[in-house]
Image (cartoon, rainbow, N blue to C red; front, side, top):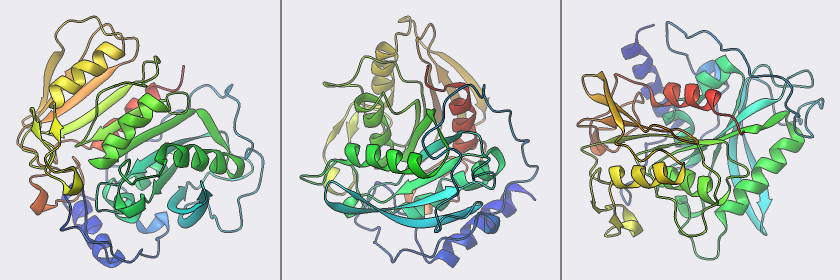
Length: 341
């Protein structure tokens, strides 16, 4: 199957699910009714399909869910919509369990996949394109719903505790590897991922923010956290260079710019202070990588890219989408190489 046909199929899937792609842009992004999640077999993988990669050393101890049968509402190879009580509030999320899930499964990685402002977990579950990779590689994908379709901005709400409660609950039901819990997200979800790297570094092994990232700030733990990120230079919502954010309640908020934020992460992760190496990997993509780090800091600069997820279906109102790379495939390769150490 060609990449163009895959993108067309994913776009049709979005229509079939009855959702529109929201991001950190927006009042224009509504809150549609949650679709009925489809089995993973309804989500085609790209062709040619990369081969499954070998799992890390099996010596890592799994969570309490290892050896247990799946809960009645979860089916291996399918996505399920679920609820969780956290801090006296009902929270919702989608979870995809790979075909290998079950009593005989080895401890599986977990990818937390956070949506953008004004979007939903169901939209991000499709847009991020993680399910076909999880099906191939044998890991769990969770796409939570933020209160008021947002992360970190609702008064009196502790999203970080919700994530801890969510990971603990899943670990009691599924056989997870606590050394391989990863966070990724789009825009506001990217900011959520970097915040988790600071404030929950005991939980999160590595992160992959897309089109949104915050620097390590006050209260950030000392642990270096591996980070791979993606951002378009023509992003009109979260600017690539220093400026202000243009996104709902965030509008007008100052943003230091991606290079400055990356430099702060390089400092936090113990890199050697030299200028990062730049490698052109496609006509529109440059890989920026820091040297001598205690934990790697890698960035993909998408020349002319909009407020979009590289390799995902196009969202014209948010600017151009790079097709020369897949942010999710690159992020997964990075995650595999960087378990908790």
